[in-house]
Length: 297
Ligand SMILES: [Fe+2]
Ligand SMILES: [Fe+2]
Image (tube, rainbow, N blue to C red; front, side, top):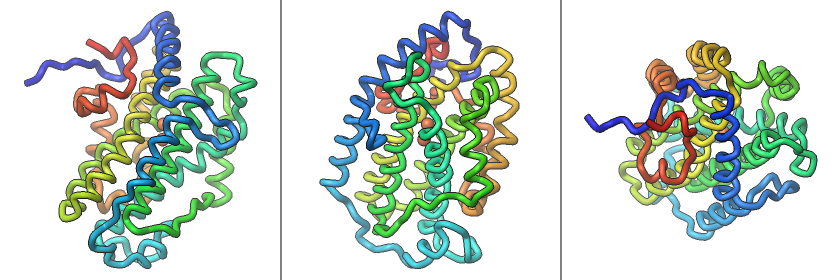
């Protein structure tokens, strides 16, 4: 068995180590994302990368079996999820996952201080982090366009859930930190499973398969860095709470998306979340992401 290079994300870290890691993350983040365009919720390097994908489009050779099934079910499931093809089901499920993210970041963006009014390193890091999340939605959008779905709208969640996402960022930090960390961990776990599903479902569309995975990689690389960054906010007690939150949090969240249990093994995602230690990520991803120093063996 290969030697483990990295340690569990739940590894202990002292206050001083965490402070040093914030400094280090901030340097990484500026290199990784470039200049923040506050007005556009965008970042220079991410914009350039997206433009490359848009200017070099790849499309399905054989169009989706039933695009109408996608448009009918992507916001709310209308049909029996077992009744339509797995490719379409994957795309509606992916949209629904991203839609939650989009609602969450909209609530947080309006509440958090902008860069000009961010006086602490943590605030600055959080502002760029949110802008990166908006870039992810653009990448998801491009993934859908790659599959011929060019009429997708980003739709707000219902009033209850919308309110919840708006109130969440207003809670004190000690309540926010663990759920925010577990959310990032859930993102990475889901994207790793999604990556494998893309391989399986798009085997007969090699160009699209490659492009979808490239687009998803851009997202996952940021999300892996976010996992470490959000972990860095948390002290010893919070880490115990975080570990205990993985199962209920993943279970509750995925229950809300009917496609997930059709396509994914939620129990395995929970296990992967609890066991997360960076070692299963491909080298090309490790080379571009950020890992806290206390998770390096
Ligand atoms: Fe994200
Ligand atoms: Fe994230």
